[in-house]
Image (cartoon, rainbow, N blue to C red; front, side):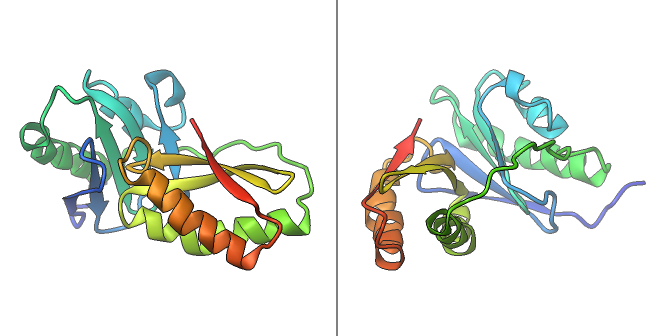
Length: 184
């Protein structure tokens, strides 16, 4: 069954190597980053995009896909074709993202629960507007470790966002947070 009502537009991000492709409907229930073809087992769409040699990373969000390219190709050459490819993939009801199998059974401390809530409810939606994502990795002795994804990864303004935005916001609400560090 073909769904003909889906539109895909694209917009620049603060990272000149990343472009955000926005869908007129939801395409995924979570945000997932893929940095290599080998990491794309959960996403036929990301695998398709990694078929192009200029692909550096793919992030799939709720209603968008952020693609980061190598610097030797220009968006003016590929953006329109990519938008069409993405639209066609979703219109033909091809799978975008398979569910993740998780085995996490650990209990989070009150501080970690509070940190994750602020990240998920306030920070992630804000950075998603620019085609990026920020993901909790761990919290140890006052230091929060996060991973920047999508357009945020490699963005010239990512450190300013991390320190001036994310770290400031978390310190204001969670006094136990001393520092926020982005992992590669």
